[in-house]
Length: 250
Ligand SMILES: C[S@@+](CC[C@H](N)C(=O)[O-])C[C@H]1O[C@@H](n2cnc3c(N)ncnc32)[C@H](O)[C@@H]1O
Image 1 (tube, protein in one colour):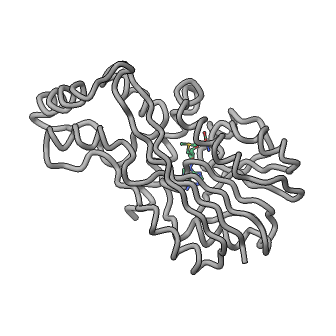
Image 2 (image 1 turned 90 degrees about the horizontal axis):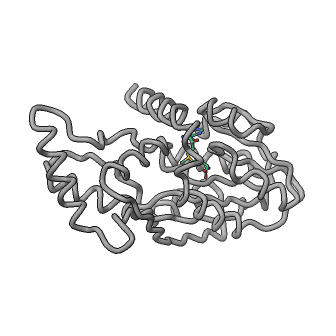
């Protein structure tokens, strides 16, 4: 039940973010480009699981692939204007062994990864490729530290450690698993702009982000002043701990 509510909140946040997502998704673009660079030319069907506004689709098609976009947030799919499926990554409405490449950039961190991996294994052909970018535990660590400075509640979502994927992937029937972590650091002009951008990305769900309650304003200011102290020449650093996963369906 809690998982259902959480999933609905995630879908709604990304649906609301759709009109502004492309204006703020700079790091997301860099991560998608890095993931596409890991994908080889293919002749079969490619799935972009959690395709958002469809940034990767043209580039995946340039690999020689027929591409299907899939996302559970309809407003995101409507922005992508491609052959698309509105569905859940954890329950793909695709027949088994139909894909040459399962591509997914920055969606798995919002899912139950055991289910996402099980579905990826089911829909990939034997020998098919899995290429996924997700987020690791150091993502938004500056913001996590700033809120910890303000109170003892957890305001920023925890992301799974990169090592946790290896055993899940081999149990699901993947081989040649490679996992790489790369830190991407964005910069925001100030604390409020940074929170605004995170909201515009749809990534503000779960974890509460902004302290609420009787002393919410004071706690918010404490977090803000801690974060401002991290400022450098480029602004406030915002770290994305990208985890790149590639594997082959056995
Ligand atoms: C951060 S955006 C990334 C979008 C795109 N891949 C990109 O690189 O710009 C995450 C996307 O995953 C989608 N998503 C999250 N959980 C999902 C799920 N369980 N099933 C399908 N889509 C999901 C969201 O709706 C959102 O569009």
